[in-house]
View: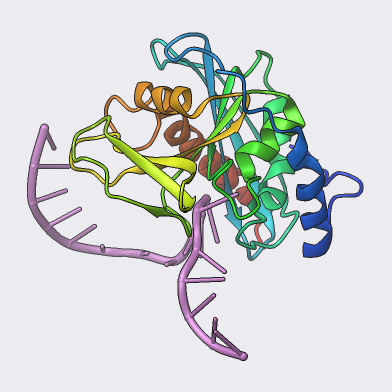
Length: 234
DNA sequence: GCGACAG
DNA sequence: ATCTTGTCGC
């Protein structure tokens, strides 16, 4: 397996990364509804790291949105392209994720990311960044509220409350995907509406807290990392 | 100035 | 993210 190259000109420091976010932010599209939930294809992407060896593995798992059956899977392995800095997560994950998406033979449809889109310090999280670079509709589903404020949503599956960046600025939603289970934090990435994004997430969580797409992608990228490290330890 | 901080 | 045993429940 070949190691994914870090793109030429990829930001090497925080100042350059901030400048890139500043420049790409204007290309986010927020006025398209996005694909209707329960139809077409949905692709989950996720990455796993080995910081000791500086290796990252990414996975893309394409699901039939109606049945949640796996349609196609792909992985990619590369060198970590950026340190972890809150607010700059995308620069760490995107090169390898793009390689995994590029290895698919079918169109990904809606991309579901682990993390945020609009709910971001500069309103340009991983899901927005990935959406802009690929042109694909994308949403973010995070396990934590980051620094944002929210009221605890109702205890039943499907209930939601606003994720607020400030008084009156809704950047996402705390969405209960299972009865009495901690909510997930959904935000728009690119070319999808927040209501639509939440409907997709509910459609992807018939049984577990996290979307089936991210659960599948999470398992696959861990496996890919193990396999990659097995071939060349230390 | 200090702490918090998606994955 | 990752480090980690047992344990409770379907």
